[in-house]
Image (cartoon, rainbow, N blue to C red; front, side, top):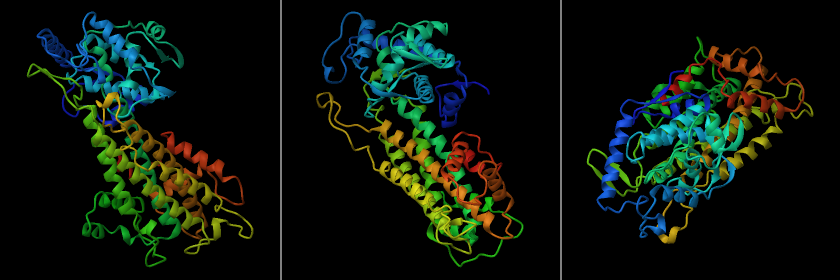
Length: 507
């Protein structure tokens, strides 16, 4: 895998880049123009400070201390600034989320808007490439910049706090020494430049979008397999219908389902029209495609933006206060994505209940081949509805849940980290429901006498059967669901199907 080159120009970093660095240890390189851009911005910042300009976080206090002048040892103040804002608590963020955060901050800083000292920037990239990861507690940001969470990263670079290195937790100074890296000293504003950004939100958001894209492809496979298993009327996928109502994403979703079900000769439908969870799949999945696209755009704006406060405009030679760190658009995108995921998950559960109920389109009750007192798949209806309840609970918006802090200076917030994290949790739960639908649809196909699915659907069916055997008599289906879910979530689910192009187009 080639290294990711940070250029600080244009839409240089995408969500796929973040996932590759965070999860596959892709290396990061600094583009040829970045250091020069940082040096220029640093010079502008120093000249502005020397002229007597009041610069937030350089020669003034922060938040409610805005009116307090800072004199004396600037480096000591930057350390004090970090120590005083190290208020995050709770379970530490996973290493992949920390790596995503580190890359997100490096990408943002490469634009040159912070005035960060080049040596500190290089230290950040070196730590990422060396696998030295700060321990970052997960609770503390309200989305007005993630500065309380980000102090763990800044403290790592000066040799303070704790780090994860080679699978072990240890003092940051020891981790740097073992990786043959040295702590850095902070020049004026360097501490603030490292922490006053929404890098945790953007980094974790990139991972959530990546997961939503892969789950979408799996949901399309499950929906198509349900149509095969239940003998659905596939005329709903006729492209003329979706041209008549060109709703967002609907044509793309219908085409992906159509391609999954492609065969030389389509079977005759067993009914004029099917329940809405089947008949309206293109609309439901299309809305999700649009929501994923919106979240992807919002994340990539943050990854490639100069969102610092204060902001150094190197070309103009000025330093200005800004609200660019405020991520209302990011929060709104993930609230919307969460609702779209919840809607899609609800339709998946509805199809699962249709498949596993009293019998539809000639399928046996509960998808049991033995009948009688056999429970078949019906107990899983309770598990599915309990998972859906958890998703629906998380779908409630949080971006309006804030209180004024810092004596009213910070009287608005976006709750971006919470909006992203609950959306990510919803995606993980949704993937469990996809596993349920895949299992039930595969069983339905097995129970249709003399029926052979189309080649793409058959490939999905075969992939399921390598993990989960057909139900011949009652057995613990929860174990089977766990095995299938592990394959879906682990990145190893590759039945070799056409709808992968949907993910690639969105990514």
